[in-house]
Amino acid sequence: MRIALYPGAFDPVTYGHIDIIKKARELFDGVVVTVACNPAKNPLFSMAHRVKIIEESLKEFDNVTVDHFDGLIVDHAHQVGAVGIIRGLRALSDFEYEFQMALMNRKLANDITTVFLIPHEKYTYLNSSIVKNLASLGSDVSDFVPPAANEALIKKYQKK
Image 1 (cartoon, rainbow, N blue to C red):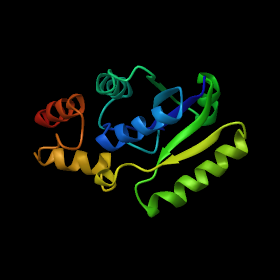
Image 2: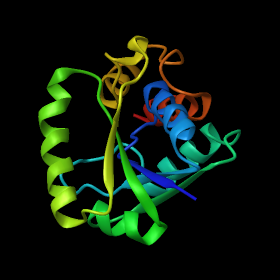
Image 3: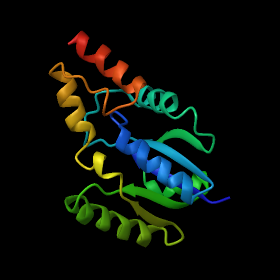
Image 4: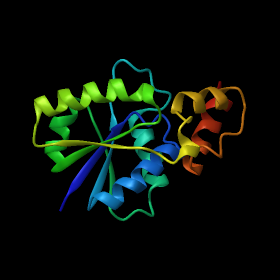
């Protein structure tokens, strides 16, 4: 069974992320969506809450699991038996960073291949930061995120 790991902050998960997951499901027997702990970021939602939102958003996908990790992505890929790491590219500006990370991951674990996937063009401008900014200003973001993420954003920003 060929497994791919799709790591990210997913703070929150967007329809762009889900589009990448759908594409990965066509290429691999299973996909592990992994919420990463990135100390450089200050997430809006806790890791456990992000995992819950993603699980709810992907419940109809039978070959997708959701987990989390803290550490090197290649170590986690080995732990789950992944042969590939999925990375989404929205624009040329994403490529330089992702290319550097792919090369470093290959140096650390040459048995794992990075696969770049491009979302549908209607999601190329979309990212979690934009969604959070819009939601914080009271804008409707339901066109950009699945219902579980939309509800979580509404609750979070009503408290502020």
